[in-house]
Length: 238
Ligand SMILES: Nc1ncnc2c1ncn2[C@@H]1O[C@H](COP(=O)(O)OP(=O)(O)O)[C@@H](O)[C@H]1O
Ligand SMILES: [Mg+2]
Image (cartoon, rainbow, N blue to C red; front, side, top):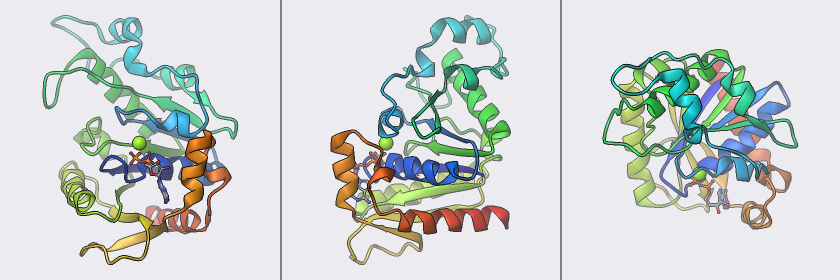
């Protein structure tokens, strides 16, 4: 089961990734990858000590090379084991980090390395949850083929709806067939013309958990997330 979670900043991608990771971790080994340059997933899962892969410059140059010639398929099969951190509930988390770069489709060593790690994770993980940014940057055409489902998360505002529609187009362009909209922080308003596969209510306990620095799944109402998980299980089998 490989799920990518995307959407505009602030809609709840990281929260949803963390809670789904917890629910799936009752069934098997979960790897949660933070692909968002804002890097909040580890903290949300209660992991304070982590190093983003993008900062491991020596390793990156050793594996990819630098200068004019470098490998597009560097050796990365040991990276997840070495550099992921387990949280207290056994969820493995890996943080990709940020790349300073020169524009679209950059071919710097960092980007080649992170893409290779993601490709490897998609191939090898039983349960993989990816906390993406709105641009779904690290997913290329080749990688995307292994993604079972993309969730485009929306909150009750127009900008997040526009972003989600853009994400759906991007995802389809790179070959992800199952793209679904999820409404988060639902307060009962009529929200646009999107068809939502799940509506997750606004839950004050999620905010409390955030402020207290504990994972949201410890205190929030899990029911809506369990329904979303059941939906994901059913469509990825189909
Ligand atoms: N269902 C919800 N109810 C209430 N607050 C929520 C809910 N989901 C997320 N939040 C809060 O919204 C803020 C943004 O969530 P976050 O998951 O960090 O978004 P993103 O990763 O998309 O930027 C956080 O403060 C989080 O606690
Ligand atoms: Mg986030």
